[in-house]
Length: 298
Length: 298
Image (cartoon, rainbow over all chains, first blue to last red; front, top):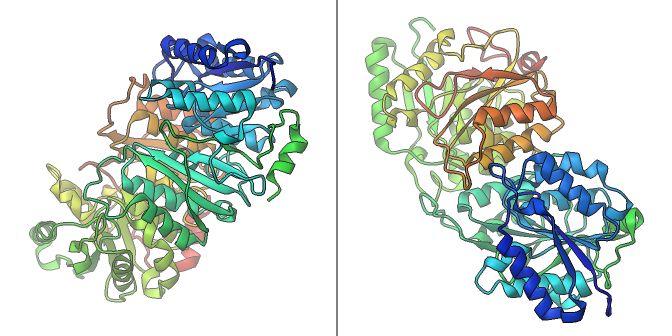
């Protein structure tokens, strides 16, 4: 806070980014914050390439641990989604230390697999929100500016507007959360407002994933579901005949989960920030395991 | 068996079929079996249309129950996959009676959601194999001929070649089974050889689904995994860098599940039949709940 310069470490547990992303994000941070601009350390792993991934599993896991366990780094920022976080979770989670527990973590989409595992492990300062790769969107500066305001000042005006200190929240990509159900990464979301968003899926897949999520007994204990934006919905053959909100309302009705309306999140520049657990400002990075149980008390 | 004419009821819990499919399947059955050709009753629901589905949920559920609970029908044959079985499972399963328990059920792909629920409910004569809609494939007569030989004569030469009476088996589409994990439809596959196939997915999705399946503690109790064909794999951006067999071997290695090699199943005309549970010939349709526990004893 204040005039303190924070250090942000960036890693890419899923897909890679181009070096130009790092340059643009650093330039924006300098322009916005001048003398108190954060030091943003893009781990070289972000630019590596191994098939689908930003380096192989061992490389990505090692980079994540180097940044997470570095006591000089205040926040770990996921560079991008894509796919790959779930592949390194089993290597990473048991090797995180006390310095890792004191950090803020910010990302979304594929990063949800690690955010889920970190939340389950009791990490206190996790959030769903924009990533460096969002700078490539048209108007993407707005998303990155919001992420920086959250990471640097824990600014409340960066939050999804329905977030309150009264109720714990969590946010996920629908397909990513679906693929965590029944795995060791599945977090306990009892009593949480669960915000969901989607991108690039046919409506029948969204419907099937909502069947999957809302049929799960643990997910049925959430306080309610809010639907973020479902963008770039792919053509359904034949036309599905229902909107994404109708689909989500249907499964909320079937499962008895309260449908609470829309959430201001999605794969876009307006993607607001959703803390995991109960919002506390300034966001405590020292709560550790005790903070987690506080954050989760529904 | 013998000169007895069986009655096969066809319903479509997911996507619809054209009436021409019914005509072609009936003509093929008559040509093959002449005087002992089965009576194949396509429920009119198969040709209905409601958005993505062969009629709305209530229509599809009612048709399924009419056929399943009809004591004059020997076998229930799923008309087609597509998507929709999971949406009617909760209505259908509690309403099935003793006549339903005595039937043979045959289908695959989306039908796996109901086959899973039926298996969990102790139904004794369930199998993964070709459906009437397969007649539309080039050379599709072969697939339908195989299905008829299974339904009429329980012919052992229709089976996937590694199926033996010694070990219980089950087969699923990877994505369909992934979407059942942690739901009331998830079957207990402990001790089973689990055969998996896929169609029309990018490799990163296959990888993510295999993470999901093999991370699940219940799935880790299978006797092993056999990989069927993964057809029409969609382009991965960037190239994934591993074949489907490498992906499945990877997740078997990580999870400690034995990888047993390939299975002769898939979304194609060579799709062999895989019984759920232990193979018994002739396939008993009277085992009921007792038969299920026998079939499942790993």
